[in-house]
Length: 377
Image (cartoon, rainbow, N blue to C red; front, side, top):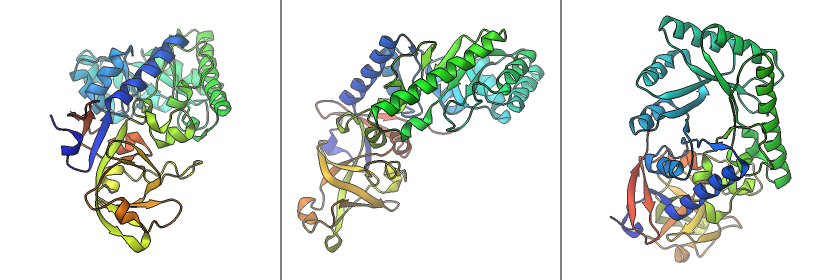
């Protein structure tokens, strides 16, 4: 087992104390609200992280690719929601999982897609459990709760012999909020829209047993979840600077960072050059439109102490530029000499994690263990 000081750079670090605290916080909140919790594992794509979430009380998982579903099912997790609209070409992959015993749920949000699911299932003597995606905030995909298409999709699925398992929604626009009042309002909008869609289906004779909602901001902000059966959230397990700006975590909750080394300076510009470029951090600039812009990440010491005002201001493929937000620091070479090791907190944990083949899980004593990530579609 290596220690952090012995790791090569750049490396993706996971602070296990912070991660477990984040897991326990979310699970305790779901338990208090009386709903099941189905974490979205696309954030970590990592078996030990997911096992920690399940050990804390989660029931089932959410994935964003069928490759994730295959990997987690291989490792013994069978209750899986594939929360991306089903492309017809992937139905064979989904059926193969189901035939091996995976309790896979798929989603749709249109009559055309429901027809494709029905046609494929009929041709292969199969039955899929399908959840209907609801649009509760004009953010991305889904059917609005009052649209006629909701019942049309349900009837299309039922007529083809599919199981209409429930409704699901994701209030992605919650990432644009930054006050408790706004977060509570979008959480209630998400809840009410999903519950209304479920009621319309039930009034039309569909059982609709599942009402699934969720995003990290709404899960941590909802005043109540009456009518909801389960919640999904993902980035909470690591948190990141976007979530810090939204207001659902502090800098001390961010469990993912990138370990990097100072490799040069441009003293007249007030720059330190590090070996974590966008290949290590990603190009995500999610904080750029928020109340505080952290560039490509917040600079911390090797042991995780935040260095106020110092950010990764820009990056090339393998070079990151570290600078101060108040202007050029003429003492930057003395502050961060060649060879200094730093941690960079990411804007978006999902995007930064995706740049690395593995995490280094950091124990309280500084010891580390390599945790591989899943890749592919």
